[in-house]
Amino acid sequence: MKRRDFITLLGGAAATWSLAARAQQPGKVPTIGYLGGSINQRAWVDTFVQRLRELGWIEGRTVAIEFRWGDGRSERSAEIAAEFARLKVDVIVTDGTSSVVAAKHATSVIPIVFAAAGDPVGSGLVASLARPGCNVTGLFPQHLHFQPTQKIAIITTLHASSGNPG
Image 1 (tube, rainbow, N blue to C red):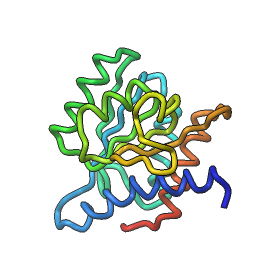
Image 2: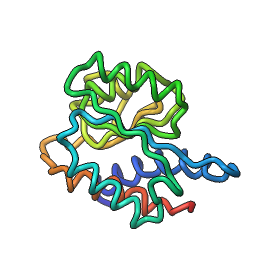
Image 3: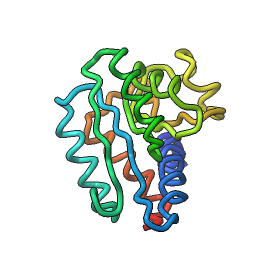
């Protein structure tokens, strides 16, 4: 198994595990808290929602998605992450090191899946790449630079490979 495939599998499993556990509760629709850097990420979001739909997760019917935008301000990202913790979303999806750090400070219980971040070990997000040791997981492309649609494809592939609970 290639390293990228393994990391993809790991991140999807974390996101899906939480959604699967909560989805089994009658009347409870799992909620994704999406912490984006900028509203200009609309293409990324559209692709994300479309791929979820292809996997059987229909926004507003089988999954709720709370979209929030940090607008490149770390204090705004911290406010949003704290809001998601209060709302008890099932998973926080984000990208960018500052957003991941804000989410990690807001909760140690809710799984946090990042599409990309700077050095997760060096920035203190995880203990090691092999064993993150916390509620944070995601992709660390190292020297690779993924386009937004590629990030979505990787995350949704992870989700699909872990099995669709719905």
